[in-house]
Every structure is written in C-alpha cells, then in structure tokens.
Length: 550
Ligand SMILES: Nc1ncnc2c1ncn2[C@@H]1O[C@H](COP(=O)(O)OP(=O)(O)OP(=O)(O)O)[C@@H](O)[C@H]1O
Image (cartoon, rainbow, N blue to C red; front, side, top):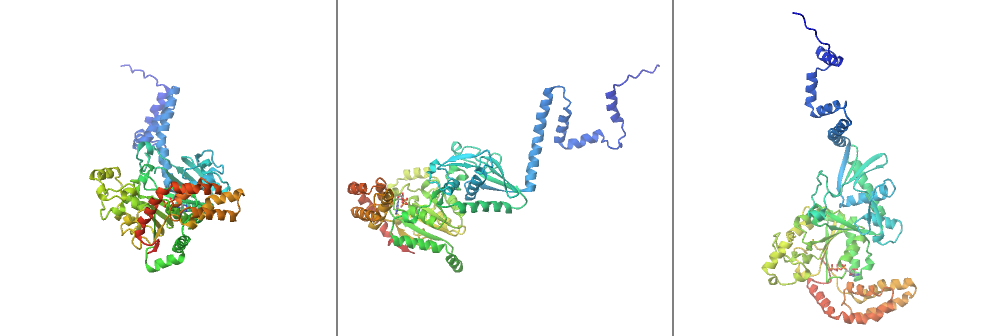
C-alpha cells in the first residue's frame, strides 16, 4: 500500500504543537496541565488570564468589553489591598460629630484647613447652626455680627488630606446615608458599616499617639480661641441619630453674672461655693475624706425668675460648659439618662430643668417604665384623682419613654456616674419632689428664686434702659440713677418676675421717660397676674428658708 502523503501543517499550528512536544522537564516551561492547576487555585487569576487573552480582539467592542471586565475584576483586588495597607500601615479613630471632640476637630479644620485655602471644596453653613467655630471666628476678627449673618466653611462630606508637620492626616466626614426625618429612625451605621455622622481620622504609624496629639491640638485651639462663649449641650432627640443618646451643642455668648438680678448676698455665696468646689483644696478634701466629688444645687421658684439664666452664667464664670437635660420631653428613659451622664466631662455644670414636671416626685416607689406622668407643672399640681385611668393610659402610650426616680438617682450619683460635675436641678414646685432626690449629698444648697425686689428693679432699669440712654449721651449717670429710683418706687416690691419686668423694659430701650410714663399703666394692667405670682411665691415657701445650705 502506497504510503499516504502527510499534509503540511501551517506554521502557527506547528509552533503550538511544538509546545506539547517539549519534554516535561524543559527549563522555564510549566507544563500546561500544571499551569492550569495553579491558575485554577485562584479563580481571580483565571478570570484575569481569560480577559488578557481577549486582548487580541477582533473588534473595538471586544476591546471595550475586556477593559470593563478587567476593571470589574481588579476593583475588589484594589479594595482588598487598600484595606490591608490601611490596616497594616496606619492607625485610625472614629469620633461622632456630635461629640465635643468631634466639634473641636471640625472647628480646627474649619479654621486651619478650609479657611486657609488648603481646599477647593467646603460645606457652608449660615448662622444659627450648632457650630463652635462660627463664634470663634467672630470674636477673633473683633466683629460684632449677628449670628444669622455669619457664614461658616466646614469640611465637606468626604475625605480631606492635610499635613501637620511632616505627618499626613486623612479626615473623612461620613454624614448620614439616609435622611433621619424621612425614615423616622436612623441606624447607627450606614450600609457600608461606617458610623453615621462621624469623623474618621487616619494617619501613618502603629500608635494612637499622633492621633491623640492631633485631638489635643484641636482642644487647645478651642481653649485659646474661646473668648466670650459657653458651649451649651443638650440631649438629642431620637430622630437625631444614636437614639438621642448623644449630646448636641450650641455656642452661646457667655451671660455675665452681673446681668442676673438677684440678691447680691445669695449670688456671692453661690459663686464662692462653686469656686471653692473646683479649687485644688476642695478636690483634696473630697479625696481625703473619701466623699464622692460631686456638688448639687436645687434652684426653685416661679417661672421666669432666673434659675436657668443663673446656671448658665455660673458655668461661664467657672469657665466650663453647661449641659441641659429636660426630662419632660417624653423621649428620656433611664438608660438614655444614664448614658448621657456617663458622657459628661470631668468639669461641667449639668442643669436638669423643671425636674418636678417630669413626674418623678410623684413616682413614690413606682419604678415602672410605664408609670404615667403629668405633662406640665400645672398638671403636676392636680390631685391624682383628676387623672382618669383612661387619660393616664393614653398619656403612657404617648410617652413610652419615662425616667423613674431610681433611674434618675442612679444617673446622678450611682457608682458609674461621672465625678466632678456641678448639678443644678430647677423646679417650680419643689414640694412635689421626692425627699430622696433632694436629700443632703444630692442637693447641697437650696436657693429660692423669687419675684423682683426693689434693689433688683433699680439695677435692671439701669441695665436695660439706662445703658443705652447714657450711650446716646442724653442722660448723665446721676440723672439715670434718680430715674431708676423713681421707677423702682412705682413697681410694687416682690410682685413681678424678672422676666416680666425685662419684657416691659425692653419696649422702652434707651428711653427712660417712656418707661416712667408707661409703668403705672403696665402695673395696673398686670394686676390680675400679681395675685398669681404672689400665690406661686407662697407655694414654694414650704421647702424652707430662701437659701438653705444642707
Ligand atoms: N433674675 C433675673 N435677672 C435677669 N434676667 C432674668 C432674671 N430672671 C429671668 N430673667 C430673664 O427672663 C427670661 C427667663 O429666665 P429663665 O429661663 O432663667 O427663668 P427660669 O426661672 O429658669 O424659668 P423656668 O422656670 O420657666 O425655666 C430670660 O430672658 C432672662 O433673661
């Protein structure tokens, strides 16, 4: 049989077949089955290999598809590498923006990073928002501008890189990923696991020390630039995120103590007591005697007599921040109150406003979370029989969050409670308060804030009307003092609250004659409320003398 002619292979085919003919142990060549098994162990490599082989495309469409697919395949690798490098080479911290530290960092960045032109991107807010930096800048530039006219540049949502010395810092503002108002509830973390509305700060290195140093820089900056402001903190609502467990802040001009009209003796006594409390001698005394380092005051009296104003002014005088707690919002619970107290700094003034209206005084041992409570001081005075069972149940449904007496006591001086705070409780109806709440050790001083006495009426006239009149140059100081005396004689002693007198005098700003002409009619017009004020005064008298040290 004639041998058949073997047809010639094309050259390419010959070359590829030659690969199979190579001995297995040829140097530099991985047998194809071995090669495939290596690649099969890493599915990602296999995908990449296939994609690369597509780079001998027949059409532009193939090429484009290959590039997109390559990008998709490489992205997880990049993310993984990024996370790995961040983990291996950097240290980082996360701070909620509503935390005082977060506020300090934002204020520092606003001034040192954003305003210094180190960025082309900023978040702009106008006055009225809770931003410490706004006032800081106002004061630094010596401008007297209405807060609502201020425009402040803050770091935008996203990441900012800046250097302190030779060290880079990456600060990421996370913002909210879903609208709290729309959702009615805000998750603590966003979909990608980041803490909502927080700052994430990263720097190179394996120690937290540089980050702590950075936070100290921000804190020192706040102290240095804080001229005439007090930071007022208040507890957030459920919709604000963190379930309302975080403090929110607003910067306010410090109220001077001399703008609060009250008995000078009581005022000086309180100031000296608070100053002594924060002295080193007193700290040592508390430590030596093993007494928990806490101090408490109860300010009681009719509404509008300066209880809250004096507390804020005292905080400003002591150069510390003030933390306001309102128990009657219907959103406060034992747990939330406890967490808020745990987050207090070492030195601060905490004010629990209108403590009687939260219903705690009537709890009388009922520590149930669902115990109903009155919604206003007026309701608190009603006998229990007036609350029908139905309305009590409805009230409990409306206000599922409630603070119990034991929860409050635990928050203010439980074992886990922060030491160093100065606690002020204000009340319109102190006789409704539980004795346990105001016992010595929890309340060290009880101060009555009452209606205006004649010397205080004279002082408020000079402050609200006299100052502006004197500035206009229309009156001399001796003339104004005579007018103030006349005004004080026409306003009945111990009858009107400071808030009422202030309200009248504000309408006569800079015009003493107008105040004197209108005062008699004003007194007559407010006569029916005189009886009410006097009654309120007698209500509080059963707690004891005006000022009482326990
Ligand atoms: N003693 C005072 N001296 C100067 N201004 C006062 C005084 N008391 C009240 N005012 C003014 O009245 C207003 C209300 O005062 P503030 O809120 O301090 O009263 P309060 O006693 O805490 O009232 P409430 O019991 O309703 O909380 C403020 O504008 C404040 O300036």
